[in-house]
Length: 417
Image (tube, rainbow, N blue to C red; front, side):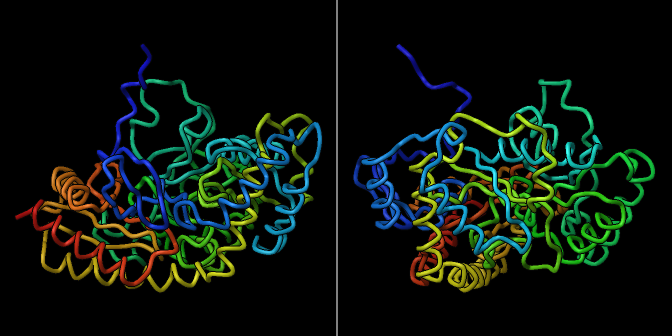
């Protein structure tokens, strides 16, 4: 008899039977308000009818057209559609299956294009679990412990985590940029540094938005030193933060953009985008894969883009995200155990701390568990596991946000008394 690996721990006790919009239904018929969205994947909601129909139609004509063997129309149409939403100049795409794979591809490209080895990432980063991506991941030791030696050439600089440092955002940003400059003259010479890789909002690291001045400071330093700026938009892309791309909250523009999660509403698909002149510098044979650009996933991605545009899901993310943030702050005002509330769009978090300001993972775990008991599915994150995050589908309504806030208030009260 076979079983799942014992390391695969469920965040909630739900055995899901079906999904619809912002809800999951378990095998007992109970409805759960899903504010996990499959870790930021189902941006159009569970089983959006237009996505389902697009996938169903594609399954009946072509499931797998391996795209280095033959070409297929869904992939070509998706390239055109993404060209309408990608930042100016990022006109060349390479498709893969997962975020980790896309991160690995971006590293290959950066090293080939620059002839340099080092990659700079930032404390709290999550870029994946594969060996190269794990070397760039600092959201917690569980992602990198016991597998060394890790890929060489990864250098780590501070991320401006204002709440953690006890500083203003401006002070944290000045510190982080000053330390990055110091890194470039000590541990990772600018002349040996291929790329900065950054999330516009730290994901696993605690849902901490990058200050605009920080992203713009990275852009300025990248230009000054001939370093590529890679934006990891795996979780922040496709409207999640209230802009189509998370980096659009600043004036900084990437040289390479990584996308996955919300790209195909639950079908495995990821991509990197770069200017053609940059992508051409990748060496022959460095890009490929059996399942990348799968025809069904591409059809689902096309439908996803159409739904996002037609239903104004980016605008809804901004509006409902502001409502959610306001409600979370009101709950926090009644419970000093919540030390900080933060986020952009429908990417919101509450951080639990003790009287001395130290992380309180136990309180976060109790609140997370209580929320699930009340029918609200959430996730935790942060290096200490003391942050509870909310990532509802972008189709969420005012009434559903208010419902979730009511359940959250009850859960917090149950958790902290």
